Amino acid sequence: MRVKASSIANLTDARYFAARQVSYLGFCLEEGHPRFIEPGDLQAIRAWVEGPKIVGEFERSPAEVVREAAAFFGLDAVEVSRLELLPDLVGLEVLLRLADVARPEAAAAAWEQAQPHAAYLLVALTREGAKAVLQDAIVASTWRQLCAQTPVLIDAPLPANAMAALLEAVQPTGFAISGSAEERPGFKSFEEVDALFEALGYF
Figure 1 (cartoon, rainbow, N blue to C red):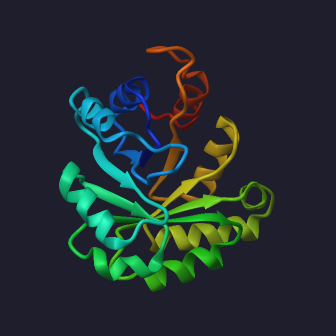
Figure 2 (figure 1 turned 60 degrees about the vertical axis):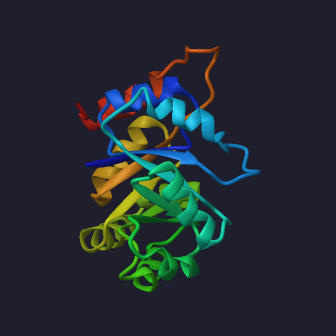
């Protein structure tokens, strides 16, 4: 299962997730965003980790800014939230992020529009959408059918056991999980993240 660690902003997170052998480490390169990482900090973190692909995360930036950042940082992939950018990002590995998704039909429609330009669809479920998967077998089946045909990474606001149950129900290509602030420089607890990996039998 592919795992993307998103919004990495410190070396502690980066080293933890790299040790977990995640597929992607994502860094927010959208200036003005609360999770924006300074270029120097990103370069410093990269010097300390190896293994995962490095992803630049963008929300509103135009295609030329995304391409310039990809070249400047030597990014392995980019994540964008705007469908209209995709034709201008040919040659890059692109993850298309959909926020606040409640139903699988929305994800299916976006994926159809994204072809052939996106490699993955990163679906950020709403809390209600995630609960519907767990509570309604028909909804879960519809998501599972989509995931069988589409390379989907699921992001959902659920505790570890519920997230593990959701992933088991829909069988996506993988999932995304976000980094967080350090409790103090060089230290933070990964108890909740460890619980998710353990519930999944991951490593």
